[in-house]
Length: 374
Image 1 (cartoon, rainbow, N blue to C red):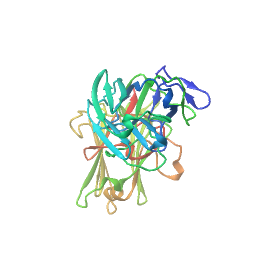
Image 2: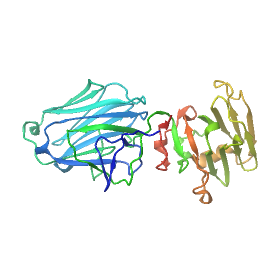
Image 3: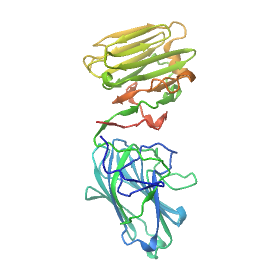
């Protein structure tokens, strides 16, 4: 069920109180919505809005004057708020307050008072940044620009604390400096915010995420790579994993229709169908001359369900991993475009015990990196 506070207007405009899904993919720093106003007409320098995410990192809010020479950014890093301000060739950064990437709605408030900018979370002041510049004592004039989900800079620039700008989050019920002017957006339609979410990566059946395996920096002496996945596989449908390299391929596909619920592992010469593990966890281990699919009936004991092994002497599955690409949520290859995309929620993906970040992949706009509808 989607949030009922969405409010779209014709002509690329949206109410400032509307629900805004910041996960709507676009160019890396491009904002989802933006607005401009005359500083002489602004009577309140306080903005409040509700914010919800499981994502630990990304850009939330941006404001600037002087055509972008002076600017402000509110972001999240490690789940903790970050404020950065640049004025008159001076730049400051502050990080602090509670972690707010817990999937709950939090009310955030930003207030500018003279030399200081304050951040409130749920009514409590958690962060304060001050800058004493000449401009702080002068009357402000000209245009103020604001943006949600990105920045309005045209040139490449860097924050003191570098971060990945994309954010799987939702904003709603905004009161932006008491302005009633609709916000502008280049999107034809804003994505909805679901009323309830849970952690995971959500695949809608319209696209997938692709990685080069070389980004995982496999050590030369490594003897295996272990990929683990969590989720209700009985509720998934479509390709979970696809790897292609050196003329070989491997796929893991979930089937969920009215008659069958199963998971199929297909390699260069073997197809094996298994019942989805009741523990909602499975693992694939890539070794020099073999690959193993392990299911967990007991979630803490690998192989407590069943183990399927396929051998590939000479070339080896580990070589596939070193040299290839893999996709989560779809099939790789020219002949597979648009076919058998995954529909469902992968709660967690790990490679050798480290969480896989879908924001680091090349992924379709329909894939949500950190949240699934509950």
